[in-house]
Every structure is written in C-alpha cells, then in structure tokens.
Length: 427
Image 1 (tube, helix red, strand yellow):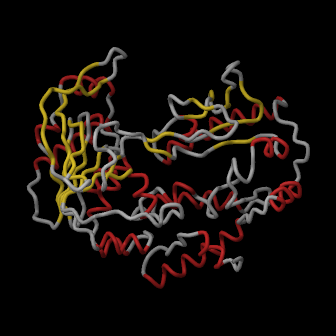
Image 2 (cartoon, rainbow, N blue to C red):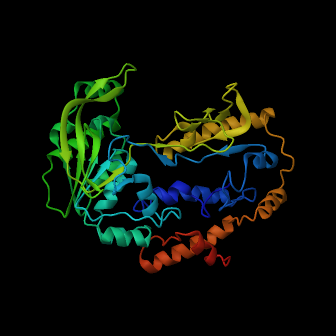
Image 3 (spheres, helix red, strand yellow):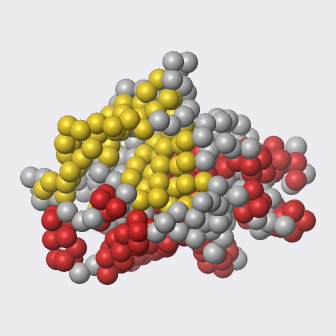
C-alpha cells in the first residue's frame, strides 16, 4: 500500500470528524491486515511523482487505485471567490491536522456563518462550529484548530439545502447528534420541512423507514422551542445561493438566496427549480460543500464528466475499446463518485476484489519484470524517497496516543512531515 502522506488511514485520520472517535475504530481492521507478513505499507510515497504507472507495472501483477474524491465542486456563482468564502474540504482537512492544510487560516470573526450543502461533511462543519471549548479539547482535533475555534465569534450557523428535507444527504445519526448539542439550539422553519406532494409520493413508494425517521426528526426540531443556548444552528431547505455579496472590503457580507420548489425532471428525478422569489441572508463567512470529484491520475483512464476513473465493477476500462485494462482496478469514491459513507465502501471494495480474484484465477494479470520487494526498495532508494513503514507509523501512533493521554484527549497528532521525521530520528 502506497500513501502520499507518511501516515495511513486517509479519510479516517483527515476527514472523519474529530469528535467521532467510534467511527475511527474501523482502523482496527486495517491493523489486523497490516500485521500479515505479506503486507507492506509505504508512506510518504506519491503516485505520479515518486512512482509511475510504468514502475508499478514492472513490479506488480495487479494495481488498485483508491484515491477518493480530493477536489471540490464549484458553485459557479458571483462572489464565490470573495475573502471568507472557503471550501469545506479545506476547513475539514485543516482542523483534522492534514499536513498540506495546517498552515491555512480561517477568519471566524463574523457572528454568522453559512454552509452551502446538506451532506455529512456540511453537517460536520456546522456541528464543529457549535462545539464548546471543553468539547473541542476532548477530541483529536489539531491543537492550533482548537485554539482558533475557541476564539471563534460565530454564534449563528446556517445549513442551506437547495431541495427539501426528504432529499437531504446527511444521515440520521448526524441529524440526531445536532439535536443533542450542549451549546446550540437547532432552529428549523416549520414550512420548509413539510413534505410537498412529490416527496410524499416518493417516500410512500420507497417505504424507506430511515428516510421517514429523518423527516420526523426535522419536524420535531421545527416544533421544539429554543432553550436559549449560546449558539443557534439553523437548518434551511429549498434555498439556493445565487450570489455571495461583497461587504465593501472584498469579503463576504451575505448571500442572495433563491427560493425553490420541487419538480420532476425529464429523467424522473426530483429537482429544485427557482420560484423567482429572492431573500438575503447576512453572513460573514461561507463554507462551500456542494460536492466533490476525483482527480485524474497520470496514465489512468479518467471520466472528466463524472470525476471518476473509467471503470466497470472496479475494472479500469480503456476509453477507446471500452475493454478492461489488464491489471488495473479502482475502489471507493474515485470508482463510483462521492456518495455514501465509510460503510458503503465495504461492499464497493468487495465488488472490486471479486473482479481482481476472478482475473487472477484466469491469468488476466500483468507480467512484472521483477515483482520482488528488493526491486521496489532499490527503485525508491534511487529516487531518494524516504518511505515510512508501518512499524514507523506504529511508533508515531504510540507517541500521539501518549501525548493525548497527557492532554486528556484521544491523541495529539503530528501535523507536519518534519515533525514526523524528527520523531522517527530521520531529520
């Protein structure tokens, strides 16, 4: 396994919310695999820079790409690039201590923040903005982020969804969690969580009990009187930003919102269409969370329209012949697009691995010139790459956990490559 960062666990370490420690327990399964003597981890090795596709083809019979959806989708509206308009992905990576984002700065001096989108990333950002300093310190959030969020002046947080409550992408556990915040009231417009005829029809036809529970919970929040907590988390539906407004100094001063209604598209899906009614929401900081897309990898067939590796059931396809490319596979969001949660990746990975096993049994694999460990180590040494092994990671992990025990948190992360290499005695 190759990772561009010195540490394993990717999304679990740098994407999962720092106050969701139970979810991070999935790393135990990875640790069991890593203990197998046939497995090797190479951190701090970047595909396309330190290793090319040709290198891997000379070393391995099969290659699987699981690089996720690393970039944000744009809103495409005026004012999107004003100061204090941030991609939610960068904010999440920053507070989670990702080495590439640790030096970013987020201006949280405004009293009102807006988050565009109603997926789990969006609701995570909303919840993090509403946590108390005591709650923040009990997480494995990067210490610099804890300090910045402790100083935050944000008191009102708006979560904005273009469609209705039945189409919101956040999951029920995430929705339930915001109703239990110690320092924030949840505010919902009753009219915005009443189902329209199309949504009622869809819900009745699907018989989806989880979806029905989500709608019930939102309607419960709408009927609940505020308790006068220090912050307010507002859930809005059927609104779309059509412009971010300049505060006169080049920063965000508000959002122009279009009111929507739901309609049936030609393809039969439920879509939002503008009613022509506009409103202005005054806010001094905006986080954009309207979708994500994969990034093309050198030499690997890529579908630019969908932002995924061109594949069928995980087998990479040749764009000219639409036939499988021997020995190349994909899994996760770079395979299927940015949908689902960590649990969704399990059946997705099983599907890809089943295709890999079938190809291996049939002899449809690459013919590497030298598939030995020595050949890989020699290649990396010649490139002056400093790989981090799994044993190295275990040493870093123990140091982080020990620092966390002293601080009263799950761990205190190393947030730069330099810190990690110093801790490993490899300056």
